[in-house]
Image 1 (cartoon, rainbow, N blue to C red):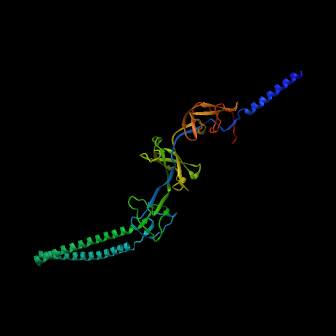
Image 2 (cartoon, one colour):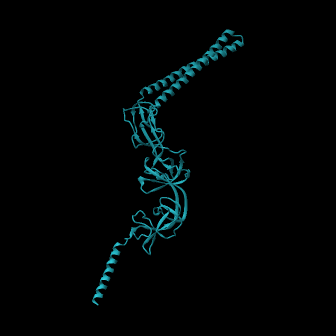
Length: 381
């Protein structure tokens, strides 16, 4: 009897050891994040392949049309200027003197014109008087013809003096044009972004085909847009006036509404880069431009199509081959399910077949060990 009790004790102990070993060796549940299949809006979008750039609608990199020494520099970087305001002036005392000379010459030309034309009027009156006397027989033909000739000569002198006045006016215009070339004026209202030069420095215009830093970089920050490259495969889907979303690295996860204003009519073919088509997107609200600076890194998401109130899941839950892991609460396990999808973007994917509203799916699909039938536990946020 004692022997049987000993045997039963050994068997019972073995079962306990086996149970402990099984418990220790069994698969440990994997902590996963889950979400429910829901209804909502799903969009099909196209995004840029490389970072885009925030640009000013108007930006002028200004340089003088002739070389010279900077004599006046009334603006500084960051200053707001008005259209037509002088940005800087090249030494031009010689040209100013030439303009003054031309203006003096026109005064003399006007005086000579006045003198010649008065003499022409007197000669014309004398010719008429002699013609009247000739008709009455009180003057000779010779004196009347002489007076008529002198009147014509005086009128020609008046016309020549008038022409000299026109020439003097043209000289003033030439001198003024030469003087204007020494002034750099603001072509529009804007902000001075950069000044390359100091008082007394000598500046030269850029040689043909060689780009040099501008003397003044003027930017109109009141109007901004985004320029971004789109892959050539996606470009045919984009049309002007399509709605888009704009995001900027400097503004975190904030999005701004936009509209496509231009699609480039050609494909960029740059070495070592995918072929792309540049698009330009405007901000729908000018208020969005506040505190933005040209040159910011920007991205655009052009909305191609929208489906409302359809089944959807986060795109991050989608496995390769259009599959998802569905969570089974009864067995704390997951199963791999094949689905049929519709519209999709980086945020949501539309579900056509394979899932039902309220089903729970795994979103943390990049965890090691996940597979069909794996034991899981829900990770609390």
